[in-house]
Image (cartoon, rainbow, N blue to C red; front, side, top):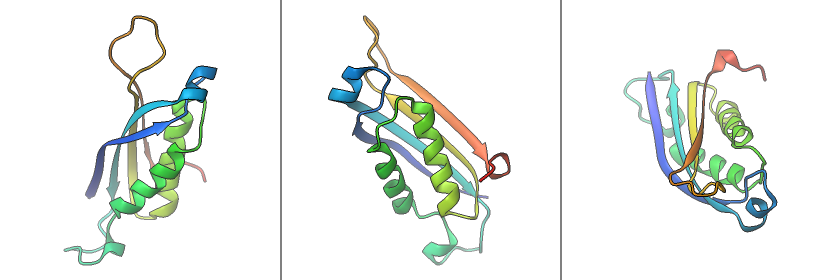
Length: 122
């Protein structure tokens, strides 16, 4: 099993339930873990692996589409990766909202979604 990880990808986006979040936006951190069946060994061509630059582009596009729920964003990321890479077996993504709109709150909040290809019905 081959794994590819992208960690702490930083985005400024307008996800959130509240009008202020949609209006002013906020900072988000995204982690993605992709486990794939090895197409060949050793890997010698980008088409035999999970192209992390293509994953980054997928995530970047999705992060620019405002959604009220991070759960929706996470689901779109997982589905896009499965659609792009037929040999991806498991995808896990974590999305952190760096400064959530909670009074007197210090820290961050996150949503994590992990699915196997067999658990999704396209």
